[in-house]
Amino acid sequence: MTLDIKICGLKTPEAMGAVLARGATHVGFIHFAKSPRHLEIEPTADLRAFVGDQAETVVVAVDPDDALVDRFVAQVRPDWLQLHGRETPERVAAIRARTGLKVMKALAVSEAADLARIDAYRDVADRILLDSKRPKGSVLPGGNGVSFDWTLLTGLDPALSYMLSGGIDAANVAEAVKIARPAGIDISSGVESAPGVKDIARIHSFFDALDAIAASAKTRKARAS
Image 1: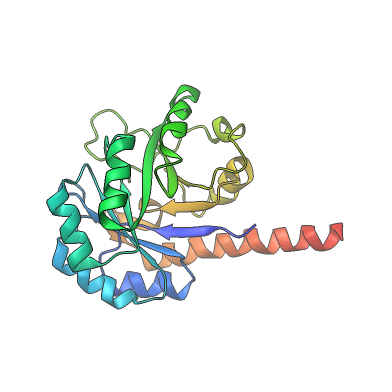
Image 2 (image 1 turned 90 degrees about the vertical axis):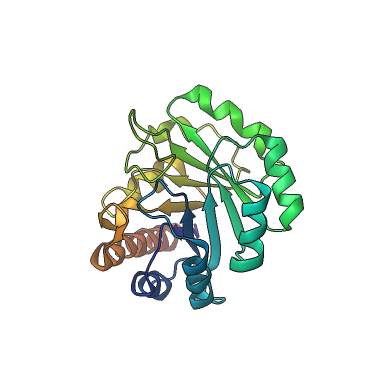
């Protein structure tokens, strides 16, 4: 299977260059003041220009108002907006209509009952992101470096194209893909040496692990043919 790979919380050209060189399909910029990965609009626009058309660009925001959404569109010109707050389905639809951009809606998961929320969003968002619920005491809706029980996802509609996030790194991405079979992987803290500090060596280790997954799948396919 071909996975979409989104590296989120990028802040420097050096880290951006590394993930682009390794074939990331999506790159994410976080606009949330409480996050160690927060970027103001102007540096976000600069990095977006650096990316060009090498990958799809995603601005991540938490319950943005219309004025902020309009600034993203006018100054950053991303391909996607990722909504990581308490946005209702109606709000997601309104932002999508207002901007004309693709919209990804993040939903927090810790138990099977949380998956019931997917149906309300799947027709108004272009993609669903399933992430771990934030641990007690955290102010961050994502990027906390914790995972959830991926076996909860084995019964999802196979037609649902979703991205998986939360506590994924080079050591466990193969397990995550094998169990959950997502359409994409979203990673941030899993390639950091400290909160908000992307580590080039860890970026390469993560993509090495992805290459190993692809090689293994190719071998299995060859043996079966």
